[in-house]
Image 1 (cartoon, rainbow, N blue to C red):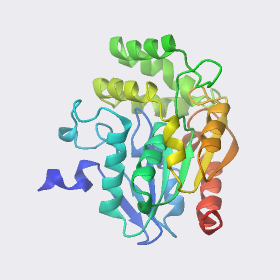
Image 2 (cartoon, rainbow, N blue to C red):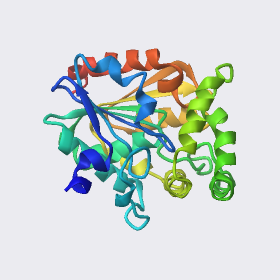
Image 3 (tube, rainbow, N blue to C red):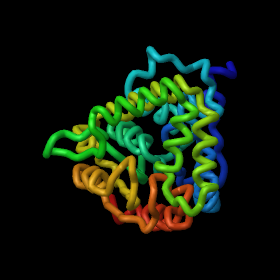
Image 4 (cartoon, rainbow, N blue to C red):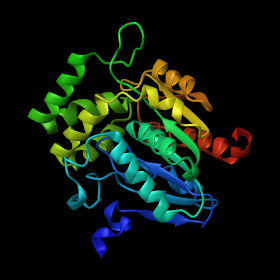
Length: 273
């Protein structure tokens, strides 16, 4: 039946060649269109798989329930379903923001499905933990963020989009992100944001042995540089690269640099195994 087909469930789009798959996963409040300036660059040598996280973009929201989606691991299971449906060989997984950690969880659970991980602006825990760990947010920061989404979602979108995107000299980038936020169901976005910002996946990093590339921007209000370095340091087989790009969405603001780093890493996969 149509509603059971993962293609429709996650609005999957697959193109390019039939080999060396790369799957792209978007962040909070976004959809697969955020990869429009990056994914096509790889279609001549790779199978490209784009999809929408459940409840976002053109995914079939009839499959969404608050009871089922209670942790990031539930979204990791969706990623596994997408790869099993689309790919006949292990895939390189490119995840932005929270989808970076979703990819880590999926690779730890089903490592045979993954060839590499590319983690753009990842955070294993957003909450500061005294002197032991600095995630960038205090408890009251996260509470305020979730409350703002609940009380005035459009206002939250208008306030957060420029802070997350950065690059204030290019307002069209902020418009792209704000419009993506505004297309999202506010209640689902708030629920997903709570799962994201209250999550603590620090102990999961060591379980993912898949070779990983951590791409980190400067001036990132969501995932500071030290957070990206922590992720890379805690993973068994990770490489850290500091981008010249600023903000939290380099695949939108600086796609050429992101393409270059992905191409360099995925193309030299054998050296990481």
